[in-house]
Image (cartoon, rainbow, N blue to C red; front, side):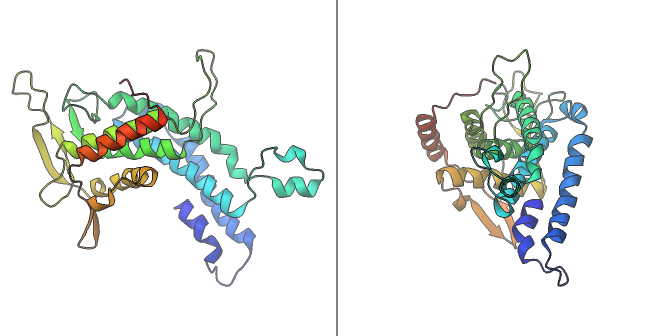
Length: 292
């Protein structure tokens, strides 16, 4: 919402008030609430919850990072390579100062990285030949929302994560770079699995997910499908699809259908295309496969 508001704020008529201070105060009010939620978030509790809860955190703070960049680029001077120290007078220093919202940029980046890394433990190949498990403390369940969030969060990390310079004595390297090929590989692999596992019904709607039939000795297949349909399962994947399309021009747009004025995602098997795209990406970026 904040990103949309920032883009539209100049064109919004506030009862005839055309004062930048009023409009900036609106942005600052909502941004202060966002920063407050950062400190109020019960991160210790969420670490022990299901992987979809963990991924919502990672994706949410990446969205906050996107807002900060968008608002700063639209309404404030871009940060110069030399910073404000090269300015010769106070006016130039003030005019070249970045938006104050950048003060929380590193904190948002750190939390998104931490929770994405926590989510990597949810990917496993023992059951269903891959995919994210919903909750490691329950019987295996590979559901749509967790895997859609995995794709969306992974491609968003690749596109928007600015890096994390968190330092700690037990780390060999303090740098966690942006545009990490591991994020891209995770998104590609997760999307391919979601397409291949047959998670949609005859209407092209995503069902809730797959259980494993434990009455069959040694069974590891996704063979008990929960046919329940929920609205959120039809929209979350669009973030992942858009990111993959934007980066590599993959023809995923054909897989989005419009029915009854609602956006319904109906993936068709495109294993060959994804395999070719994955090979191309590996060649271009020297992708190191994630070792889950």
